[in-house]
Length: 301
Image 1 (cartoon, rainbow, N blue to C red):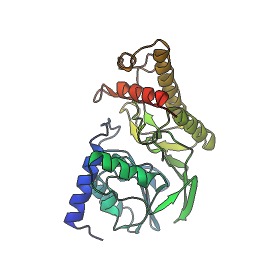
Image 2 (cartoon, one colour):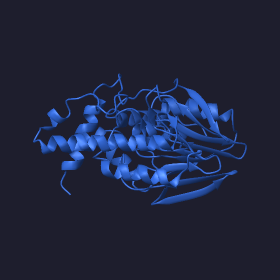
Image 3 (cartoon, one colour):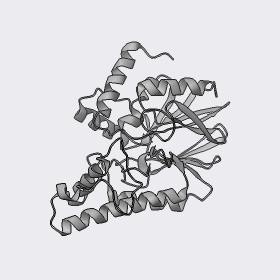
């Protein structure tokens, strides 16, 4: 189904407005690139969070939608792999660089699926940024969602507040591929959305649960990554992310214990034990993460 120009413009305006507060990240592979991973499952990189896909003769699924101007070429490219209807569009969480293209696919996707907190988080973020009404999921889940689509089993899990208050882990069971959304920023400082329900300590727990749930044979897809490390990895990378978050918390707690102001605690660009976790395109990324952890640890219950 074709989307009208007016609808596309409105969708684009909302997505852009919703993304103004979002940081920009390095891309681990060139923009506009389709990368097969395993058994009809792959990823697409352009501007925004990594898109995952399942494309076969009897199934078409997309994980996240980036922005209107990037999701349309992704959808067009997937048509070359499958002429099946778009069975499901899955949102890993509410951020504009993962949901901004929802409206561009609303006329094609049979259903949009997300954790139950995501629609309200999308609306709240749009209101804060002055954006229009976002296109949100019409199917939501609380802890677990599962569906057989074509010859693949797609499972979504929610292990609790982490990067936001609605992060879904997407598993393509038979392919043994798992899309982590922004639960893993591979070797770059993460964005921690405290107003959006984030919990830094909860994030650590979620990564440990994911590590326990999947295996060493699982291929993981990450929302963002340092070019030197990429946006795919192994179960071990989940623990690297966990250890980085633990070090962030320890750094902030040490500063609080010394009575330092947040500006002083955040006056570094790298954690000593994690020199590779740096984004030259966003050199203040670690400072933003430290400030978010500080806000998380010091907010009133």
